[in-house]
Length: 588
Image 1 (cartoon, helix red, strand yellow):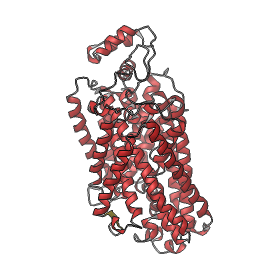
Image 2 (image 1 turned 90 degrees about the horizontal axis):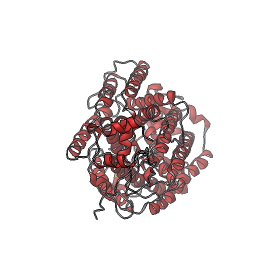
Image 3 (image 1 turned 45 degrees about the vertical axis):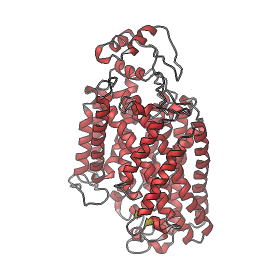
Image 4 (image 1 turned 120 degrees about the horizontal axis):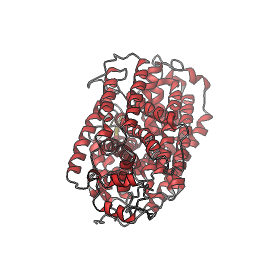
């Protein structure tokens, strides 16, 4: 229930929301409840509600929405790239990244259960800090989602080149002209399937995901019989390239990328049945399954690979790019150890696994776009839904934007660094939001309440920043250019929207210092990331000291953000602005 002081704040000219103010005056004190798709904004409203979407996805569907995003092309390439970058210590990399992901998943589980709205990662910072911070983290969310489907397309082309040699050039590690054309076709297929009603789409995705989970589990079991214990110390020992290489491998070798997707249930929260129960449970279940699978896959990959491939002077880094293991890691490995039938099965899965992940990320991109329109950042057209409850305009824009990301990054590996940084920037907004909500709306229903939030929330923010830092300066400055473009596009959209939210500059005073500060630390730090033809880091901050610098900087930004978070009344105002409106016209 709003207090009288909160109501007074809501009716101030700087916070006026036209007809909603009148609605609030008319419903104060009536204890009016709200249905999910009705026009009703009452004084008791404390939960945002999406319109035009249909809650047709159950617990299994929500779990598999996250799981299918976790088990994608990352399982096909991650174990090889991680071992090549860090040797046997790659096992430790998967465990470190798994711990980080579990902590971030706990944060998202509380937020998703508390505010079950579609495109949640794009909307939590909006509720907590207002429009300036909301624009930044919202665009990070959309940028991350829109780049994953093209990555999955590239993965299909690379594995598919075993049978169709014209798709991928192993010497340049890029797709060919034909391969590029086929990625466009595949992205179009992702978009077309997404026009199914959610209840049908959920069934299609569930069928694909059962397969996607079963095949890696089968691979783990079979390759255990080919395990050679002496491989664990081969290739230069447990950590042949040093701990710095291990940390760099976590983002650059695709480890973090492989774990991406645990938050997909948050992105689809507006379409999940009983979201307060199903959503947190789905996130945590999918995360646990994914971590277990990836750690075991790395273990059997190291143990089963032919010893001759890693016994040279360069160890793991000496595996040639033309080797079957480099082109299609697990399928190539299965062929080398005499498991031809498994190699055929894995090459079939090399199409199905990325297909399922790309399909889901095309879904989430459209829902994040929908959520940004609900925030009044994107044009209202992004909210348009068809009779199946699909935000069709947002889905088409996701397809067109995906085509743009196919152009400058013509291989799977070159896209990973960018999307990983966009993801962890998106994830950094979640612990900031959780801290703000705990302070300003402690009474809000929390079906899942993260333990020790006062410690875990700032820790999660620090860990997200470490992932950004490890990504390297080359990746970060490119991401910075994308962010500036996002600000310009969103600014133009909001300029023509008379109902845009107020610009909450005070609550985002920390944001420019955060973004610029992370860029400077990266520039002065130890990690370049990718090729070094572009501007590179200076290395002035010594190794180990750089971790301390990131930690101190993270704590300053975290507690600064908590100090200037939106006042309770203004936070509730932003929530109530999205508490339900008449459905937008369904343009067909």
